[in-house]
Length: 233
Image 1 (cartoon, rainbow, N blue to C red):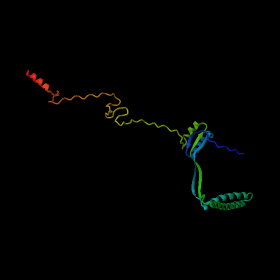
Image 2: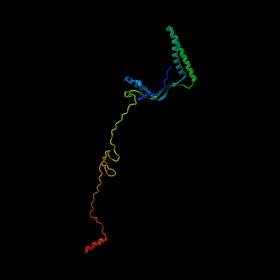
Image 3: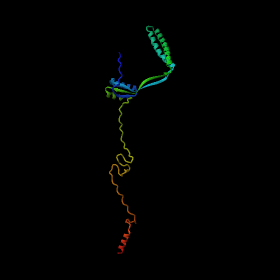
């Protein structure tokens, strides 16, 4: 009595990922050629999609032609069985008759089935299950499998290297370099230069008075009387 195995989820660590099944199969073949024990490898398709590709419209003539080809094949097989133990001429006759009879029977059955179904299924198409990506899992010698698969084409699980970006000096909007040096003698709002010691601003030099002008305070009546008394004495 056959033993039916219960479906189980695969185990292992993902070591590579591919977009097509052909690439994943080629990667497993590469592991086998490199001497890796592929009995610990599993190919898992994720994000499955059922894809139906329509190839044309099914007509009664097309259905009959398809039935004739399959009927002729079965007729030839039956003719070979019926001609067992006969000479070459008898075998050819039986096979030829089986092909003709089988083709006619196939055409009649296919046309009848097309009429019975009506227009419920008048398209010719092919169906297949396609995965969005195919991952390779390894349950043993994981590091070696990961290293070997890095050289296979189509592997999207390669480690990404960090890009070293050179630091460039940025210009300040107020006119200073990043290290604090002023550009073209620029100063801050407080009058200090970044990166340097703040110095007090010197007072502006005094300007000489114009000629013919006395800076003494204006005279008063009491002062004028005092000067007049001193001159009389």
